[in-house]
Structure formats: C-alpha cells, structure tokens
Length: 71
Image 1 (tube, rainbow, N blue to C red):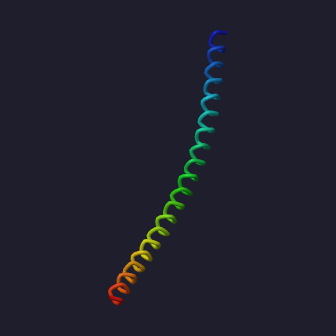
Image 2: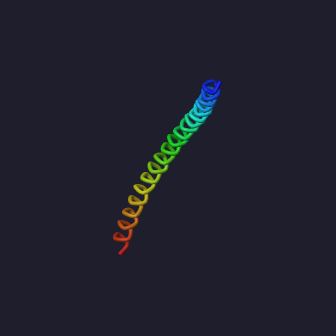
Image 3: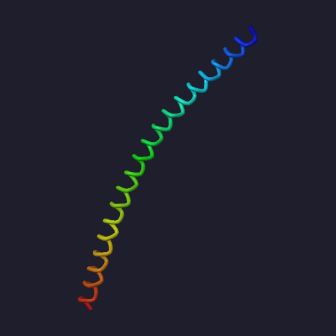
C-alpha cells in the first residue's frame, strides 16, 4: 500500500516535470525565432546605416570639392 502511494507520487511528479519541460521547450523555440528575427532586423539596419554612411561621405567629398572650386 505504501509502495503504491509512493509510486503514484513519483508518477505525478514525473508528469509535472514532463509538462514543465514541454512548456520550456516551446518557450525556447519561440525565443529562438524571436532572436533570429531580431538578428535579421539588426543586420538590415546595419546594412542601411552603412549605405547611408557611404552616401554621406561621398556627399561631403563632393561638397568639399565644390568649395575648393569656388575660391
């Protein structure tokens, strides 16, 4: 009788742990997807920023050239 009770408690504990593991695994997948999306957005922003920086450098150089030509 005591053994059955203890077995029942262990089975209940195992079932609870399995449920927690399933929830944690699903949360991990969601977070992994969010991380990937964030990385892609960051890469896009960095690329856009780099392109804009190159345009700014080019425009500054052209401005400097035009200033030199007007003096």
